[in-house]
Image 1 (cartoon, rainbow, N blue to C red):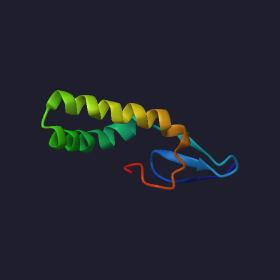
Image 2: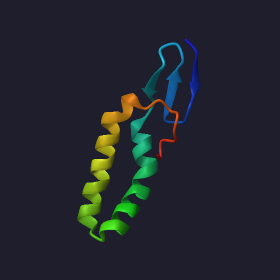
Image 3: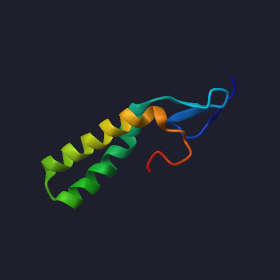
Length: 75
């Protein structure tokens, strides 16, 4: 089974054309500060920004199986 890394977070298995999660915690650790800063700047409410940030990562986690690695994880 050959695989080619598309990012440090996911690898695409060319034979099955499926994406495997390596470490979703690393995605959160890497992008959470950026998402939170954006949410805070947009809402100017720390509690709401925390809620928005959490919701973003919950939705990302639910959709992670469909991530094909054709775009950046940040996108």
